[in-house]
Image 1 (cartoon, rainbow, N blue to C red):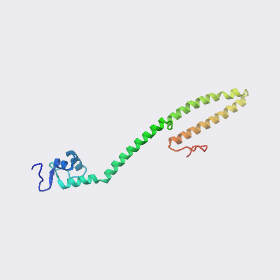
Image 2: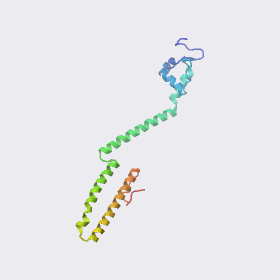
Image 3: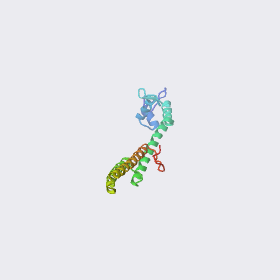
Image 4: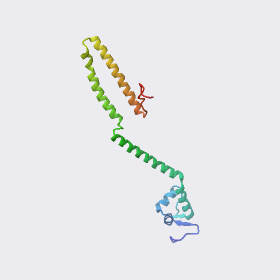
Length: 168
């Protein structure tokens, strides 16, 4: 049988089907594996079934929807990445670990500076002890508030800046 003729059963070669559909031979075989076109037997496929299968593949809404959803998700991720990079460059966005590192460094220096205040304020040991206790309590409350705020931000929630405690 020549490549240019069709048998009485309506079979054509995979190469002829590929040329007719303007795709590669492998593409026709892949459509057969996916169930759109009957699998080639002896290098032959039914002409009508090949054309109809290709049209079904083109119209397959689920395939197109999932492909477009995946492309949309990639596009959204890229947009988010670009927005975050711009916000970092503008000083609007900063990583929490950077904030926490800076806070720990400043907090340590602040605590060290305040450690000498009670002794500089009075020679009375009882009063000095009371001042130290109150300072340490205030510093501990402030540290706890920062840790709660940090946990709230890490959880992706906004802080209630008007209230005394982070929003739950």
